[in-house]
Amino acid sequence: MNWKNSLIDYTKYLAIERGLSANSITNYSLDISKLINYIETNELRVSPITISKTDIQQFIYEIAKILHERSQARIISGLRGFFDYLIFENYREDNPMDLIETPKIGQKLPDTLSLKEIDLIIDQIDYSKAEGERNHAIIEMLYGCGLRVSELTNLKLSDLYFEEGFISVTGKGNKQRLIPIAEHTQNILQNYLQNSRIKITIKKDYTNTVFLNRRGNSLTRAMIFTIVKNLVKAAHIQKNISPHTFRHSFATHLLENGANLRAIQQMLGHESITTTEIYMHLDRKHLSDTLSKFHPRKNM
Image (cartoon, rainbow, N blue to C red; front, side):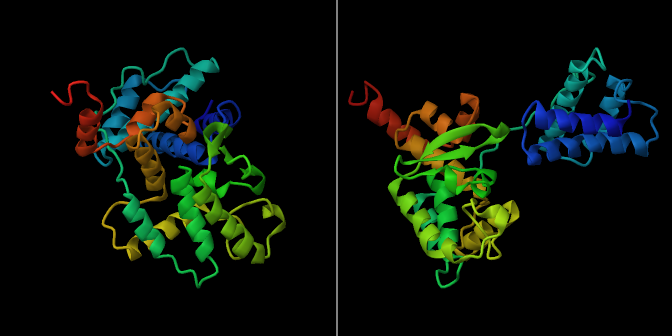
């Protein structure tokens, strides 16, 4: 077994057996390719079956010189999954990553937007342009439904159940979930569909796609990032903002206003409640307010 063929087989496994998205598979492939490049550069005569813990340790030592702890941890995790796959397929009996320690990294929480900042971003939208209503709907869906970028770009007209007040979303691992859509968000989306999208000459493959570019094709992830980046820049907000920030803000604002953590978990599509807890960035004022409001000795 050589490295090239094993990587091809692994990506097929991730797609078919694990149901991972193309983006996740690409990231795993890039991390494993770093190890392959190291092996080829140093002319090591080792295969996926014969590579040892010592070889891996030397590779980790080398990448530690150029990559920060978070990137190192991601590569180690990716390699551990790769060798677990080889064990699963009976190519190996052991995982050379078992005794490799993951670098300790602090909990990094993304910036959160306030409702005032979100409104300020929306205020920067130029409605005189054809894409104005579309961009407004994009921001509202990211924040109002807590969508991932891939979920937004893949959203279909057939996924919209306005009468029931829900949308159907296909998330990670091709898992579907229903998310409630507020009347305000629904109205913004309908404005785009009825006033702007209807004027676009839509390409055959995208007649069921909600968000389109001017040429009638589906929007790319990069385009969503560009839209958000330009609006944030125009709003002069000095934070590290990405489309995912709206999803994080969605969850944080729900929790701060008393929403059940389990309900938020379901709306975000997290398999583990622990993942949801990581997204909940609560400032100390909110924690103090919670104590003052709910603790039985608050008035003593």
